[in-house]
Image 1 (cartoon, rainbow, N blue to C red):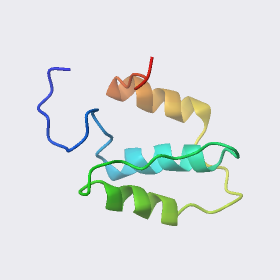
Image 2 (cartoon, rainbow, N blue to C red):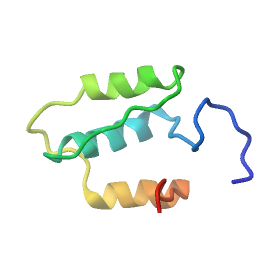
Image 3 (cartoon, rainbow, N blue to C red):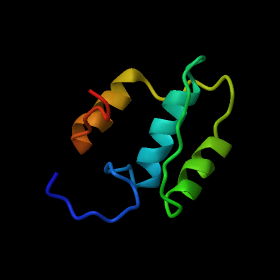
Image 4 (tube, helix red, strand yellow):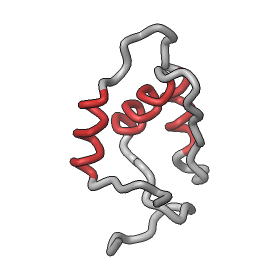
Amino acid sequence: MGHEHTHTTWYEPLEDQQDIDLAVHWVLKRPGIFLNTVGDIQLLPKVLDAASRWQEGSAGPTDEQMQELASRLGMVPLFV
């Protein structure tokens, strides 16, 4: 924790469009996985933009790319 709370979420959301794109595209390329959108109206347009640019059948991000993102940002599971 220790970060300044700058969004209307109880968790620390992704903020950078490239990071959001990677995460959204990673989820959308997996059948049967559901994407919950962010609860912050300032960030929601970024998520919707990422989703609108997803192309069905594209390769999308790899698991390794997502792992690098998670490591770089110090991401932790929301529900443990």
